[in-house]
Length: 315
Image (tube, rainbow, N blue to C red):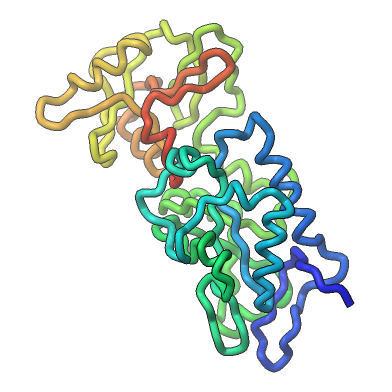
């Protein structure tokens, strides 16, 4: 009988019954899913995208076949190598990955063989490619499967789930990756992730720059309008707003001259927590609009603050 890698939500960790409980012959082959990823990432419009590909390892040590499968689907040449099965470094940026001509970070947990766990598996090629831990990237995941719920209730007494009201508290806690189970089209939880652009955002302007408005959502406005500027210090721990309202092009110099002892610069939030902190700063000054350092030019969004452009951990 021919064996294949299937994309399924099951478990093989019950040593008494060492089967892939929860999987079936009707699940998608992994190759089909990898081809879908490959076709997407090779599109010109996605040339600047960087993704994390997570493989939860229930492969029963068939790592050479897994390695070949990555090659057959043309993903191998796009994976940023770990150099030896390590955690994702804190200083690794999106710019580093793209500069190496890569677009994929392969994150893979240990191979589980009976009572033995092997970090990144028993194949040297896979170990040189894969990262075995997210490092300081924070992740929240849920399991709504029948077997998963039983397992978690038996081992932990609870069945953790991510509900609608859980999304923003997790974002506020700095969670970078949130895995939602039973995720469907127009899932109401999806809209809780929208801490940046307003659903009413319109880029039909010849000279479009970004503002934060009351409530914290972002809009494009004409760059010649006059608003206060969002400024952040060099350690990205404190936000302040300029005292004077000005055009977008004047905002950068205004931020740099705001403080004599701490250098501030014109910026934009990169996660929900920063966005909320800036909103509170804006509200304390009783302003209802701020310039953010993001501009729309020639059908492309230009992020002036390189920190925002390069961060892997930014949402």
